[in-house]
View 1 (cartoon, rainbow, N blue to C red):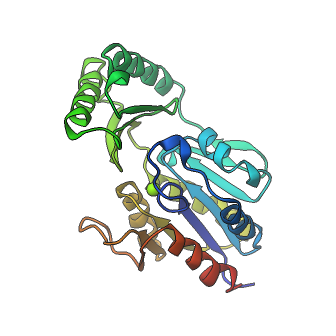
View 2 (view 1 turned 90 degrees about the horizontal axis):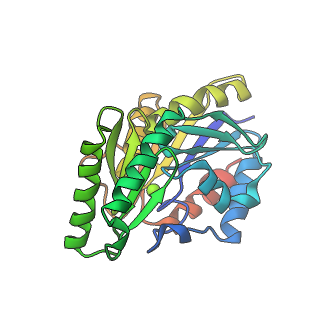
View 3 (view 1 turned 180 degrees about the horizontal axis):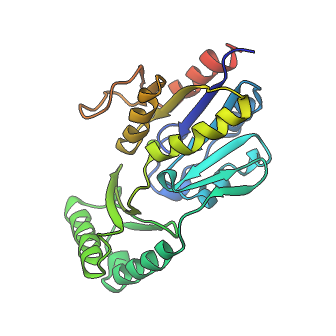
Length: 256
Ligand SMILES: [Mg+2]
C-alpha cells in the first residue's frame, strides 16, 4: 500500500466556484463522482473542511452519504463522519444562544433591508455576506455587525473573521488549523500510521490549515490567480476550481 494520505479540501472556491448567493454553491454530478472515487481509495482519507455548517455541507453533498468521508464545518468547530452519519465533535450549545441574540439584534437594526446583504445563520456562527452590495451598503451592514458584537458583549467569546466578501462572528478557537488537529488522529487511527497531509484551499481562512499542514511536513495548495502576500508558504498554486479537479484526477486518482 502507498503511504496513506489525509486529503483535506475546502468547499467554496475550491470544489465549487464562488457564486453570487451562498445558497447556490452546488457541485456537479461529475464533481461528485470524483469525490466519491477519492473517498473509496483505501489509502486516502478524504475530508471536506469549510466555514459552512455541517448541515449545509451535508445538503450539498448528500449523494456522498455513507462514503468514507469527514465533513468539518464551522472552521473546525464541528466534525461529522459521513459514513456512520455521526458527529464526532460538536460546538458548545451556549454559542447558539449568543448567535440567536446577535441575529435578532441585526434584524431589529434592519440589516436584512440593506440591499445586496445576506445573513447566513449557521446556528453557532453568523455570517454577513456582502457580495452583491455597494461599498457603502456593505460598510453599513458590517458596522451594524460590529456594533451588535459590542452591545451584546460577544467579543470575549467570538471573533469577527473575514472571508470572501463576508464577515462572520465565529466562536474563538474555531479555525481550520484546529480542523487539521481533529482529522490527523482520526486518519492515523484508521491507517495505523501517520499519513501524509495535503490541504487545498482558496481563502484567508485556509491559511491556519496551511500553517498546521506545513508544520507536519505536508503539502499546502492555494487556489487562486496570485498567492496573497500574507499566505504561509505553499507547495503549489492552482488557478481555479477546474484546476483543482484536474489535480485530483491526475495526482491522486491516477497515482494509486
Ligand atoms: Mg473557500
